[in-house]
Image 1 (cartoon, rainbow, N blue to C red):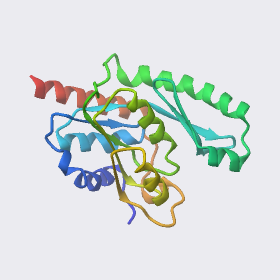
Image 2: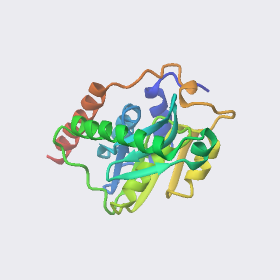
Image 3: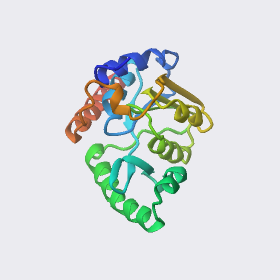
Image 4: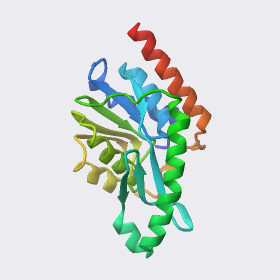
Length: 219
């Protein structure tokens, strides 16, 4: 099966998460940018707040789509040593990539939040959503950052993932939902007919709409 786009992927993913619907202790967190169009309707279906956790992929030198690791808010860095060793990437290269991507992470924090405070995840069930998993570096960085904030549970949820990455992730979170784990698996984008890059303005718009929806319900 190949998803038509992120909207279709969300509809399928939401079916796997129905047990978390209408619970006051659930919050949905998306990994921008691509995870936000998937997470927005999931949060709506679950009747849960939507927020983001900023993670910046560390792309391999000359192969930007291949992650050698990721960084997340709070100074967290996760390095995939297996990939680094396979590529022969030096520590100096890793540090230089980290420095560059940290500047982008800080820019996105300012841009997406629009002065809104992060949702408090302490003692709550966090449903962490992305549009897919290849190496899993980004979601691992997000999990490491979340652990510092004391959630009750972390649920990793994606429409499509590498089978091996999905299995490895089960050791790091409380529950993993991978709607589809095709074999062979080369890249997330191959399982979407439309995998167009999500733009910053779309992220801002969806987060603004989610915040307004939650304010309306609270009132």
